[in-house]
Length: 172
Image (cartoon, rainbow, N blue to C red; front, side, top):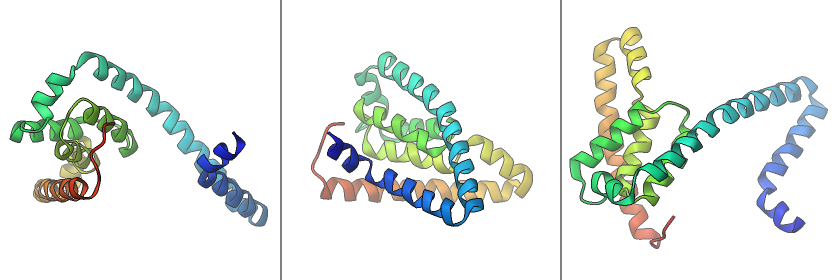
């Protein structure tokens, strides 16, 4: 049991040891590291529970057939558009997108649309676009948005092809 625990959390435990060593040698750097870690933990604790509540509701309220119809294989442009809008309208840090993506895959969304969703979440959030437009100009914002959309589609297509040819199919 202890061996399994150590194996599972070896990287985490190694980082704690390294952080403690740095704190012992350079106390000011160690204190700053602890404070940053505490702030990140508080942020995650405030974000993760609402995400999991929403995921539970998504899992219960949206049946697999509906998800497959709108974002599954064969959903075409409609599925891409839905994935893109969901990712762009979402709030929260990128690490919150991955549990949502997992539920989407479980419910039958195509890998391509899930990758579009993650790409949109990371690069085309609506608040970021409004900030850019106000501070950098509409021309810059529209150019970056267009290039981001093209990039997301290309990356999703390449990633889907690479994952389909190199990994066996598995159910999440």
